[in-house]
Image (cartoon, rainbow, N blue to C red; front, side, top):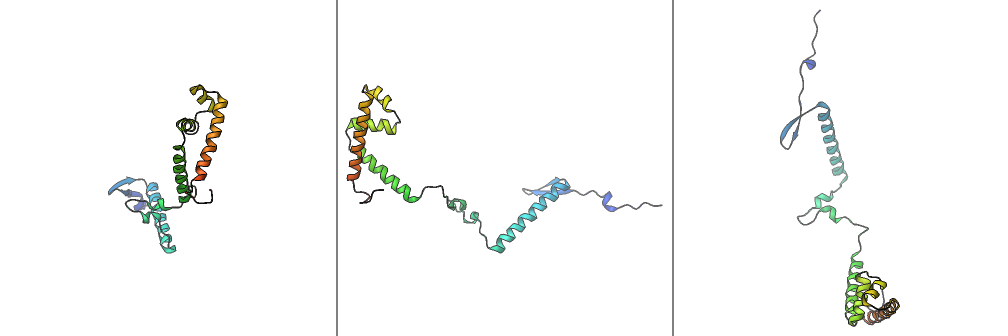
Length: 156
């Protein structure tokens, strides 16, 4: 009896994938997985076209990525940034109206993060005196800030 040979058994197939313009030999499993994924991506693109979807990457420019145009709910609003800057400028103006000693006290306690106790040790002044001065200077700053009408009649 003569044996029949199947042509597929004797011929060994070579599988290759094009990577950056070069053909790279791969196994049959890798070849099938690669082209299965390629087909899946094409299907998704076809669905996007059919449903009228637009990719943010289509909005890319030289200066800005399309993804950067997405709304960020955690980002501060433009209004709050503007108000903060105005208030900061008003505070700086008010601080510069204070005498040197009072300015240094507020600078040390609020901008340098020193405690009343540490500041009293540095200046050789009693801690209670520092506290009382701080309260008095803060009231003075409040009056200065309320006297300025940059924002109008309604306080923020």
